[in-house]
Image 1: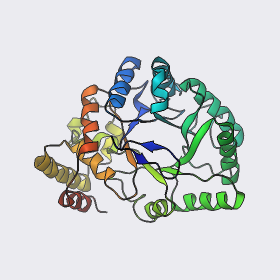
Image 2: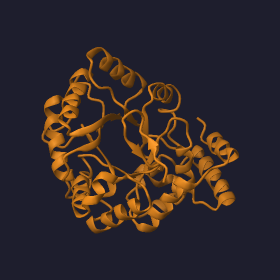
Image 3: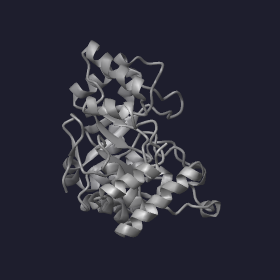
Image 4: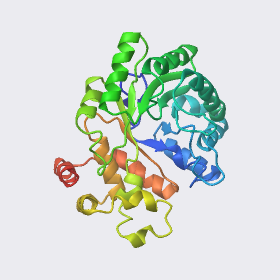
Length: 317
């Protein structure tokens, strides 16, 4: 499968990233191993996680996803050089363990490396902005980790245009590495925060872009259309906000393209993101091999200009 350059990081990834937020939550260890095997067997190579995944699940405290990935890597030593491991720091791990201070980053990276059972993280991301820590201090801490060989590249998630621009300017003035990848929330429904100035800045700076919530918490799969569809789902609260007139228009457009192509709505929604100018790859999760098989089809789905225009118009804001 053809790989895409991840900005100027020197990393190359296939056009779909597996979202490891499900590991240790809705996918147990055995299922997670099967999903990782299936994903890499299909030719994909990038796995996204975070130190905090999946602390929200009952009985979890964070680190569960990294731990499962680490066990999988240890069980398949030959895979380590073939996959790009992406993880994040900065979310609240409890007991004051949060943020982007050099002191916490130095501790958190070692914790992640231990759980992942590897000596190097391919892409290390600032999970959230930290207003209490200047960019120069955070980027300086990453500079140290890069020189130590603990990480290969850095990026950030959830920065807006002003924050990203400020971080780039700070890096230039301070002579420290700048973020090379942005991970924004982006999908057919949630476009406003990335499309426009932020996307333009990423293109101008030749940044890699990996989108999260690429299927809008599963809404764009088309299986949640009424309140009744949400019964028994653990995604109910997350999906409700999409059930509006605009959401219905987007699902209608996905249905139209599905009828024309034979592809499923989720596959089409991911293919739309992959075709967007400046996007490297979307992140998507699966909790079964059947779901995974469907998601991986998106990488080979080429939407026509007419289909792209229909979907883009339906999701205009």
